[in-house]
Image (cartoon, rainbow, N blue to C red; front, side):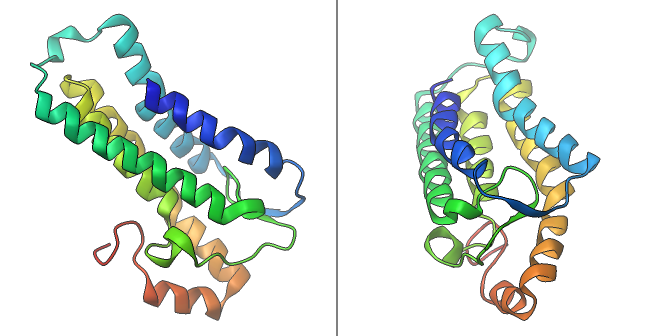
Length: 184
């Protein structure tokens, strides 16, 4: 739960600032809303429900100290990437597929390694959750929520960036992987 609170504390100031920058184009869709809802459900709501109630106890398994350490490391890394991503995006940040007034192509910081470090942070959160929650259902809910968001949204996001930035984004795509440096 501490990770979910940290996630919100990081995001909140950027969300407030983003409301002040005019949106010139948005590509919101039902599939994007489903993806965002799935990620929220899998990475925050279901784990919170489990921590508060212990349901579904039938899927519990013994907690291992090494798994807690590994999960904490994944979650700390996720929060670091999440913060760096928001900071690097600055006024370009948006929770949905939007292009803001005077939008810039960001290629520095974590964007020098991967095109979608925000998704990288969600993947790391899901991995951390899988190790931290000793429950087969709730532990894996974050990875499922992330996967639904990623596969419903990333292609649309890249098409939008290609439409806006053209060859510059295509060249950037050739130099970077999607979410895992040097691999994918």
